[in-house]
Length: 180
Ligand code: SF4
Image (cartoon, rainbow, N blue to C red; front, side, top):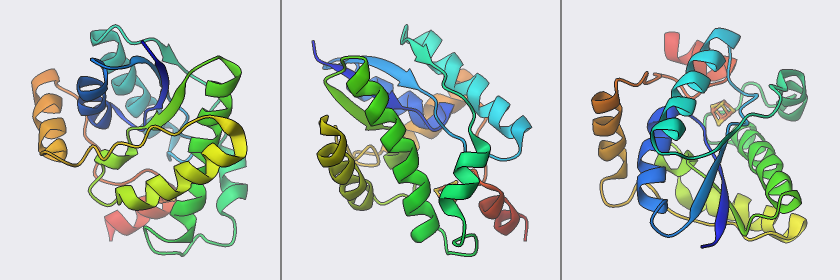
C-alpha cells in the first residue's frame, strides 16, 4: 500500500480525513502548525489531533512548534483578509514542511486535512500543493474532503469522540477577528 504523510491541522478535520483515506493509503499524521496561537490553543489542538491518530492506529509525528518562523513567513500581510496572501503563505509553509519530511522519509505522497475547513477552498489548496510537488519532487495527494458531506461528518465524529472544536482558524489575526 502507498504511504502518505498527512498534514493534520486539528482533531476534527483529521477524523473524516483518516476515515476516507485509510482504506487506500498507509497514513502517518504530521502536526506542523506553527500558526496556532496562543500556545495553550496549540497544545489543545495537538492533544485532540493525537487522540484521533491513536484511536485509528495512525503514527503521529510532531515537529517543532516554530512560531517565530511562521511570523516571519506572514510578515507584511498581517491585515490581509482570511483566504488572501497571509493564508496562502501560511498554508504553503505548512505543506512545504510536510512535503520535505515526506520526501526525506520515503513516503509516496504528502497531503493535508485542511480541505475539510469551510473557508478553505480545495481548488486553492490544490494549486499550492501542485507548486510544492513540482519544487520538492513528491506527489501531492489532492482530495476535497468537504465533498460528500465531509464537514458534517467531521462535526458528527467530533461529537461522538468528544473532541474540542475551535471557533477560529488558528493564528492571532484570525482570533482577533473572531472576537470582534
Ligand atoms: S487565518 Fe488560518 S490559514 Fe490564514 S494565516 Fe491565519 S491560521 Fe493561517
